[in-house]
Figure 1 (cartoon, rainbow, N blue to C red):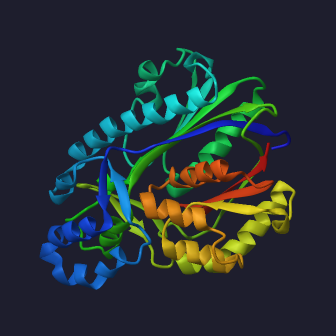
Figure 2 (figure 1 turned 90 degrees about the vertical axis):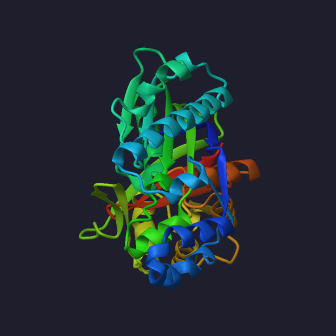
Length: 349
């Protein structure tokens, strides 16, 4: 980006059901009852995730039964539409705008299939104009919070005086698979939560923050580190245990390269704003970038309170950072399928 863009507002939303981690572990033990050796080998992950509770889109009993594609996606559509409306409406209101003043919307979601896409399904409920520009994006995974916001910012910068809404909605919990023998299925049961976030961006300087630049790094031959396998019962999560050591080994150079593309030095950054995919990933980020203990305290708080919601999670961290007081220069980062690292530079208004 050569010209800054303004972040006018940020809002978050979560579904109504809450599961405490102790209850999640007990229910998972029962759900994986036919695979006792698998669960017992991995049950410690529930105690070591740094997660206390999560919001989920269905009652806890729903997850105790087998579901196919149709049932899972039906839950996704209903929940995702409600979360989209809640987050989008709040973000537009916080920006001091009316829905008809939104010129375009970027929608990021990778945990279900929606055609027409979510912003079209929700247009009447939110109040969008019938000539709104729509950019639905699928497949970004956890990187979608950073990548989607940077996409909306580039579009706003390209058309001065337009207002762009970014919405990301993820219902990770509906991918929980009690039929799977994959260790990643147990890990997902311990990590996944659901949520949404939205932001309004525009060209100009009046804002919560200035979005000044963005960059991305993708590594070759890393497709099996993170993603979905598509199977008859639904999505099957791909989590490689190599993620934390990969982050520890590769992040510093990736951040240096992205900073170079954005015209700053890593030492110029006052704070990171990271997607907290898991406590081991946070530890790896701190080690890779030689951060002081406690520097990623907000990331740990969000992980504790909401679990890994995929793309929206980093926006929850940014929300807390804005309320605490944004440092002069902040680098948002998130890892996602590809394997990729997305970066976005924010400066205090």
